Length: 347
Length: 248
Image 1 (cartoon, rainbow over the protein chains, first blue to last red):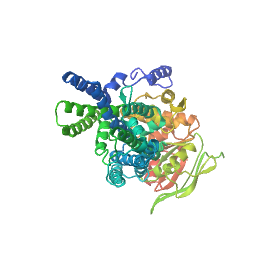
Image 2 (image 1 turned 180 degrees about the horizontal axis):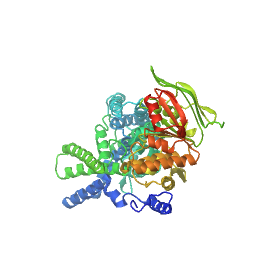
Image 3 (image 1 turned 60 degrees about the horizontal axis):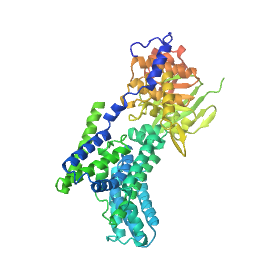
Image 4 (image 1 turned 90 degrees about the horizontal axis):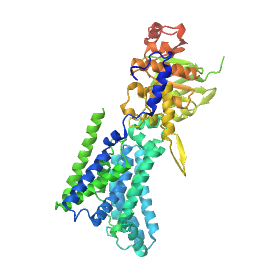
């Protein structure tokens, strides 16, 4: 094409060039297979399958049991749900450090309302509303006051945790009132042998994948992360979309929180402590770029799954569970390193 | 005389004590290509940003088709038919060429109760625009992997999308290959043939003399020349820019 294209624009060759350009329109730079190979979530999935295969071989009676798989999936569902929201914020080039604390304050709000004897749905709505308010404060300060997301959400991490402690008067809430059974059934129950939070995570992953890939809002999330100034100049409502991203992220933390209190049967103000790191780790391992512009819903799920499977495997291998933090840390650094190497090849 | 498409009257801009523009007046007809020249700091970019709605003028009025305009944001200017190709092109590297062309005005289709992106229509329309530009830019390619000329084509395709009345181009030929310069100039002629007015900011004298009808020279925030290309010469323009020739 490059060589046989006629250089005289007025010559009879114009038609030839037109045909060639038509062909180009349909061309992709890389085939689907190459896109897959360049996708971090794909490689994490491969790693996950490999670890599961090895564990099934080493400990067939412990790892690959229905019960263990049920536990593993339920354990990472809570982090997975939060990681979906975090992915949205990270794609815009932001970060939300407050999700663990929001989880804590949401649990206490919902718990107190249940304890006071109100119905399950009022407690859950109040919990979710608390999350939305916290996210709106984060989002407003980041998008409109233009403060750094790191600082704003670090502040919220402290504020929300403190509120949880104050509201709970530093007591555990385990008396869930007349609707206790319903709350336990929602968060701790299962449908068709799969825990409810897992269903919720799977459905939300599909929803987030659709939103990020098929809607204008999703496209704008990526655009803001790619080049915020360009997005602004071309008329993308940057501030509004960023505000919404932080609300979505906090909402996911709240959703995870109202589910987890049903499973645990209690609400404690320390709920979610340290979760921010696991959630951010999940998204980064799943291929989200902390510089913004890259990431996906499936990556969030698969990143959360990998962390939990590694933790589970270590336990089975008889390794002290306290090593988990070290392994998660190593995986975060490896994920970022991988991203850097890919970036270098790209340039 | 025909009513001008774009009329600027006594446009002034002060940034604190600095007078970036001191009352610039300018009329542009539909289908006219104006070369806006001047040294760095002469006020070209400021003037273009005022027309594009990036910031308001301190003084003076802008009229489009005879109606006074008050732009507060670029989107206001866009609604009035003014499009700008930014020098840094304002592209998102992580999106495809088509996604960049349609950024901020995505095509959507209805699926049940939802409105989703109409990727196919955007690829096709972007492909048609690139074809019109005779650019080998593939709508599905990531902008990250594109050459300077292809990136330029993406930014220019954007302005074609809305059939803008006035297109402002900030140094479009500064960082691209010779072949692509020819393509961009050809595009400017195409826009002219569609009766679009183009304001071309450029330091490249040959480009200006190749495509422009009229040349406007700014020096220290004031207009020092506004004349037909045929009545001027690169030597005269150089003199006007540097101040060797006082005014023409």
